[in-house]
Length: 203
Image (cartoon, rainbow, N blue to C red; front, side, top):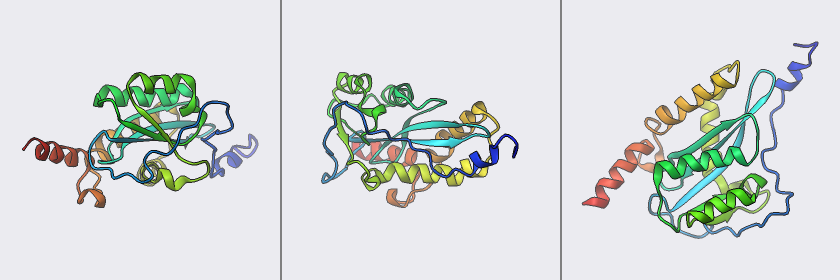
């Protein structure tokens, strides 16, 4: 590993996932001063990297800002619009939100690209973006990724992309969404919180 310089790669702590130096349109922050009080009112989208033995792969995730549930995700070897579109299509197919939903992200090219913006507009979705260099405007996504890495990624030693995909998918769908308790949700997991919300809304 020393001869191939792999140890140096493993010591890298930060990989840029946001490229905001592009010519696509940028959108104002629509969620800065609003009260989030229901499901599918606001989705939070972001990207992080996952370290493999000799490379990196990238995870795009979309959270419901009210329930903290991860409603869409996609893992890819490439950090491009296909990555973010994969997560978006999963979210749309699983949630079927009404027009007017706010999609909030950073100003990265993967979210500002013509193809991604067109998909949002076709669904009647409002586009919101955080200010450049201000991670606190996307704090819920940052919290999700921190949980994912501390409770899953850093505890495993993925040998390849397929192993990472299987383990990360299992963590998101079976542990984070269904079992992990959130103090902001009254110490309920996201799925249980959404079930209770639906019962109360129908009563």
